[in-house]
Each structure stands twice: as structure tokens, then as C-alpha cells.
Image 1 (cartoon, rainbow, N blue to C red):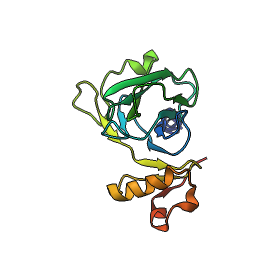
Image 2: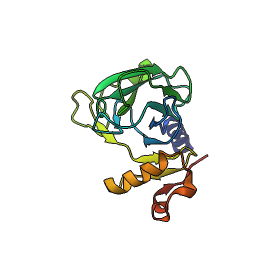
Image 3: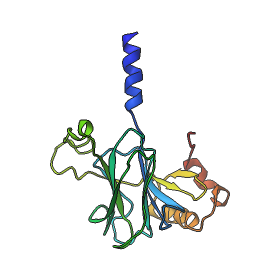
Length: 186
């Protein structure tokens, strides 16, 4: 009985926060994303300053979490391009304001209990400045359909991204990409 209570309590604390970079300036349109990203890890949408992305959203935030979200420009998380606190919202949009294309995003905890842990995430076990970076692993269409892009060649990624950036839905995506389609949980 006690073991099942612990498992239920642990399951309630697990989150799946995603960071997305959209082509639209108010978090609309197709996007590149890092799914299930840890705090203080940079989600890099582009290593160059020209990503073609205008805004960043952080989604699936538990409403009892208080986090700060940040968008970056200049390639990965190189330059600060804006930040916003969640304030109990499930989604935060960092719309385009200034400073070029959005090339990275991250979040971190504001509340004391979670912020006290200053250790770096498992992605960066050696400590340091907690500058872990992960590449976007998902491409989302405007209709919400998502594709796993982590194994695609740069040519195939560009082909899929060109389709996505037109605003097309899943029916416009060639059959060869359907194996990469992700199922969306409700």
C-alpha cells in the first residue's frame, strides 16, 4: 500500500513541458520544439541567427508551478530576447518584440522549493554554469500534427519544414514522413 502511494505521488510530480519556436509572431503557425525538456536546458531551434522563427511558447506547464520562461536569439540561447513568468498559466507565449529571429528557449523555477536545487540537470552532470543545450526534436504543423525530426537528415528536415511553413496540414505531408508522425495524447 505504501509503495503504491509513493508511485502515485511521484507520477503527480512528473511533467512534460515543451518549448516551441513558431513562425508566427504571436505563437501561431508551424513550430520546432523540444518535448519534455528539463529546466535550465537550452532548446536550440537553430545554431545560426536566422531561424525563420518569430516567437517562443512554453506549453504543458503544471498550474501549480511558478517558472520563468525565456526566448533567445543569435543562435541557440546566445542572446537574451525576452522573458515572462508563468503566473499559474499552462502556456506562456513570448511574442516577437525585438532582436531578430528566435533561436532558443528555456525555463527555470521561481519557487523556493524547486529553485533551491542549483545542480545542473542530468544532461550536464559536471556542474558548471548549467549551459546544457539540446536540439529541437519535433516539428509541428499548424493543425497540431507533430513529427519526430531527431533522426532526419538536414535535407529531409528542410523538405518537411518547407511544407510545414506553408500552413499545410498532415494531408499535405508525403507518405515517406508518416513513419515519423507522433500521436498526440489528449
